[in-house]
Image (cartoon, rainbow, N blue to C red; front, side, top):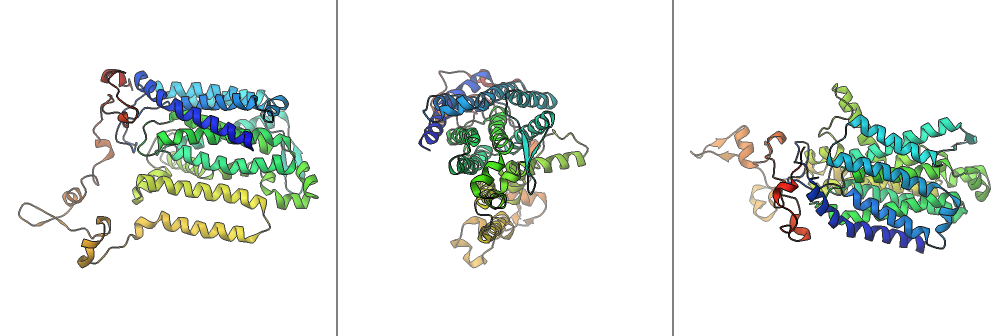
Amino acid sequence: MREYLLTLCITAAVTYLLTGPVRKFAIVAGAVPQVRARDVHREPTPRLGGIAMFFGLCAGLLVADHLSNLSAVFDNSNEPRALLSGAALIWLLGVLDDKFGVDALIKLGGQMIAAGVMVMQGLTILWLPVPGVGSVSITPWQGNLLTVALIVITINAVNFVDGLDGLAAGMVCIASGAFFLYAYRLWYGYGIEAAAPATLFSALLIGMCLGFLPHNMHPARIFMGDTGSMLIGLVLAAGAVSITGQVDPDRIAFSAGSLRSAVHTMVPVYMPIILPLTIIAIPLADLILAIVRRTWKGQSPFAADRGHLHHRLLEIGHSHSRAVLIMYFWSALISFGTVLYSVHSASQWIVFAVVAMSGIGLVLLLLPRFQPRTPRWAEGFVPPRYRRRRPAEGPAGEPVEGPAAGSALNPRADAPAEGRTPVAAGVAGVNGATALGTRSRLLDGRKAETSR
């Protein structure tokens, strides 16, 4: 455990320290796109934060290779090298997309190539554990196709949810924490060495997200972009494939005493597709809803819009930070609830606790709809958000109704998203430009502009 924690801390430190210089590089390279109508941030913000995350991943793998216990993972398995190869390809694709823009179909093809490279190096599903049947062997072609599909789905699910400051990094960090506990229990509790690579991948992913989050929390000074979102999605998928397709359930049954006991003890092992889907349940739900919504309207599934779950939370009335925290809550509830149930599946109190926490989450989710209003005589003692709205008065002192009233009460309420005034992407207009010191020595305003 000490070596896993050391690897995690090294990965987080390298990612954190490199994010500042990467931000300067993104400004110089012009990777500061203008604010689009569907964006929720107000100022142009540099991208390419995934560059720092990738070098953090490389540093973590390098440190782990020189540790006494974790070096055995590299000696006994080719999966770390497969992960690094696929991560390098997906990282290069993300850099090109963040800087120049890549067509959606080309990007999908690149994701499949990166997944295929990982499969060719041995990171693939070998069998499917089926409840009541045991391990069912699948052909190499079936295993390869299933692995590529799972990796591509996970990459795009994480990419779709990356819409608010700190949202994707925080949710993946929470899911990786739950996955780390699950994988470590398999490796340490049951002595299954095949679970060691997935445990290492989870520790590296936690470090990547923790190191990037201080720069990405609202208001974000830098975005991870597709460079980072596709990268962390690929690492998360690699851990899921490693532990669900290569860990033999018969070993768990032997350690537990019987197959029946193993089913009760490690339920998700018999769900090789459901387990990774529960870890990324929220991003996956957002992905499915987006595809259904866009195809129903006759649009391309890759067409951008403002209908994602985080956009809907903002429309309900939640603030930016509260919307992110609500998504964190649901991600933690589903991922940790699944892992906890896999440990004590016979305990009914776990189900009751998850149901109770879900009820609390629904109340928090719908809280803006039931916001109380105080009597007029007490409005002076409460914050403005709890006061009743008064009609706006015109020049003659008469109440103003209709759109004019809405604009008088809240000038931003009726302003269409398309009417945003683009902010110059110069140094003074870049979000969080003063957080890392002066920029006058670095560049002028023209260099920070983007061609898109």
